Length: 154
Image 1: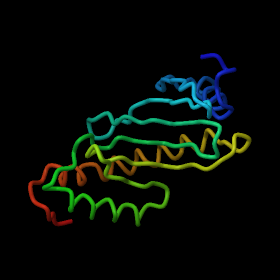
Image 2: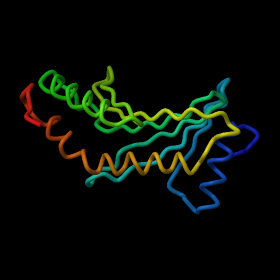
Image 3: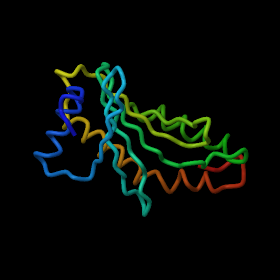
């Protein structure tokens, strides 16, 4: 990937990955006005590989998105899932869960930082925190996804 096409945060992150011999991220240049670069990997959670996207660009934000459950929201479990993820959103300050229009469950982490303050170690720490959280909570969340009842006891 040519560094003249990359935003400064992507260059820093790519250098960090190379210096630390971390080869489990792929990348894609988006060729847009913000010079967006997507870094892709998967998080191993309880026998599943959850897709993770790290979006860097020339804006003040860097986004980490984890597809926790694709197409897992149904009419039968929507209310119980909304209750559960609302509880997560109150409990955990660094992430926000959403139920998407496509019936996915997504975990987002928004990291504000201008390029000169971008911290690759912080990004990796936030991914590690998300991985720990998902490892602890995934089974409980999936119990609700697989349930047929609108009310699930916590």
